[in-house]
Length: 281
Image 1 (cartoon, rainbow, N blue to C red):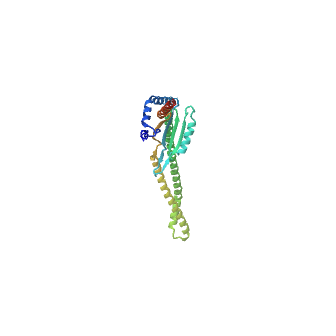
Image 2: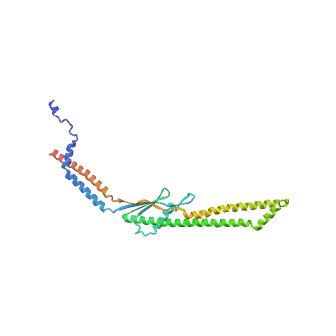
Image 3: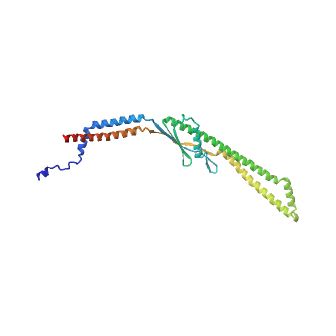
């Protein structure tokens, strides 16, 4: 009975948290040394890596807004992307030693991304590309506006020519003949000719009236073309640059954590070997 009371009340293999903390505190030099070794190694490693930066920007393609409410993009994203790629191919390889990607988003937005070892180079290149796009679209806007004016002017001249053509059909000679026939409506032998001429003149008059309406609309459209709203191609937000390699802070934090883990592991290994030697002795 006495022997049972004197027995250790807990199993011998139960982990004593206090003892573990005591061991770790006593071995703090080993743990700190391990952390320092890992940290210094990570710093040396990150500094040996060639830096890499990604610079990105988003552009919304401009549009022309017409007086009737219609809107038309200055240029389709696919056409702009193709043009940019062709223009970049003309540049020297040394000047454009980078990784460039151009993608279309939501139909009227394009994203530009450049990866290289120089953040300044990336930003300068993107700024140059944005300036090129702005100049290109300004030129396309002017050409589109000029083409639209020329088309309307051509339609105006064509309409005037049609009006003159049908007006000629109602010349003084025809009008005189028309009046003569009207004055002799009582004559039965002229009835058919009278109806034919009346119908013909009525048709010409209707066509002239319709053409005059069309001409008025065209002239108004020509005036409005000078006041069409233009939405310029513009940068969404700002040009952003991010360091993608090396991630110095992240690498150092991981090294500290790894050093701490390795240091604790070494403490337990050392303590285990020490206990093993003492048990053999």
